[in-house]
Amino acid sequence: EGGLVWRGCSTGLDAEDGAAGALGDGLNPGDKLEGSDAAADDPVHLKRRVGLFSGVALIVGTMIGSGIFVSPSGLLERTGSVGISFIIWMACGLLSLLGALAYAELGTMNTSSGAEYAYFMDAFGGPPAFLFSWVSTLVLKPSQMAIICLSFAKYAVEPFVSECEPPVSLVKLVAVISIVMILAVNCYSVNLATNVQNIFTAAKLVAIAIIVCGGAYKLILGNTRHLQEPNFASSTATFGNIATAFYTGLWAYDGWNNLNYVTEEIKNPSKNLPLSIIIGIPLVTLCYALVNVSYLAVMSVSEMTDSEAVAVTFGNRLLGPMAWLMPLAVTISTFGSANGTLFVAGRLCFAASREGHLLDILSYVHVRRFTPAPGLIFHSLIAVAMVLYGTIDSLIDFFSFTAWIFYGGAMLALIVMRYTKPHAPRPYKVPIVIPYLVLFVSTYLVVAPIIDKPEWEYLYAAAFILAGLLVYLPFVKWGYSLPFMDKITVFLQMVLEVVPTSTTFE
Ligand code: ARG
Image 1 (spheres, rainbow, N blue to C red):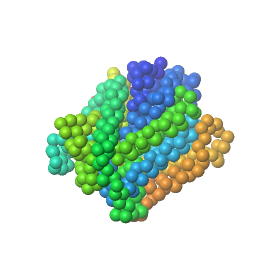
Image 2: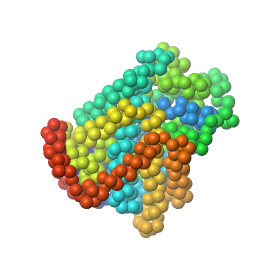
Image 3: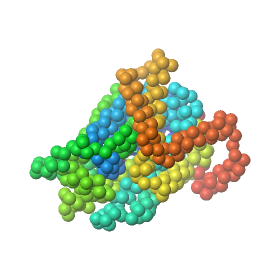
Image 4: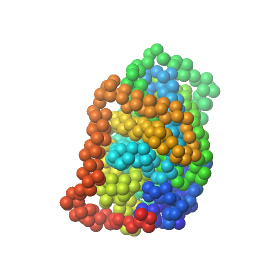
């Protein structure tokens, strides 16, 4: 027994399928959705089946998504200098690595599902943990989905509009269609979703390989002129500009913490979790460095910043009759990432509503398909709204700002627990300067853009996080519920054919 369990309801995915699924974007079929850490007594106990290889694949597969195909132009634009943008790309890799090492301590210390949720619960108690699940289900996951689908749409329409800029409404329409398609896949079956994930992960590696080989070929031919002008002096970077440039870069690295959602399933986690991080993240950093060099081997800085879709321009320059390969590979890669992101989002939603932290209906599953349809639909609706009202860049800023508040929070949780739980077993202990450093950088990342150039997005995000408290007190802490909620729940249950699942281990 190792199926994906929604309150004891097996999805019919067996342990072997789960192992394949573990190669996806943080997919953890078989992960128990229960907060207890008594995995061994659990009737649906987990097989430890993520080894070192799958661990690395999971990290790499989650991190590489849309970012490396859309961010390089934005980063160059924000810094105005090849040299500085390259340094930022590398610094983002380092920051992700350090952050992930701190998460390795947290994840081996508290092995229950829910990552940040569980650490906040341990270190700070209910309200911050609630705020995390509130923000991640309502903001973080849907905005990830919206950004990836907008990138998908950009690449999907680009080949059809040749050199001119594609109409914004067309891009948005295609993005919405892709959200609906991914929703359909995930509501249809868990198996289909994990298969899509694995096949599409391969596509992004192909895309990266084409770019790196193409760039290497150009460099061998001696095309190094754009790389020889680092332009440090011409940089337009300011205090806050650097922070938002980091947002753009860090988006491409996001997902570095995803292995923490499957700690329960890692074989020998105290060794394999840190090791997967130490191998996986530098590997991604290396790929990104090579891809950036390759772009510049083929395009000039202004060509890059003007390009709507760098990888398409790259393909047009280099691949001749095979130019169509590039947008195809990128659309497949982004579709796969969006699929994995929605999959994880559905489960997060489930876990939060099971704790009484979100509406009950969101934790129900479809009667025949066993997919968490209400949660998925809910996420997709928010993602659609974000696609309609946002742009890739504004959403990336909005996302990164919010995400780094919580990544910083996790660092604080680690530091606090070193004092409050000094004797708790820590199979992997990170040098304490690392969380301090990451906490310092994340504070800068959150504060600098607000000081430098206050934008509405930041205010919305902050207000939204705090609004969580207004929901927490009456509905979670004091246990009130709205009088008409039951009727709505029953109505939705009938329309969507979903039921609460009985748990075997609650
Ligand atoms: N880094 C990915 C990209 O460049 C985004 C990952 C989104 N995060 C996640 N946890 N799925 O598209």
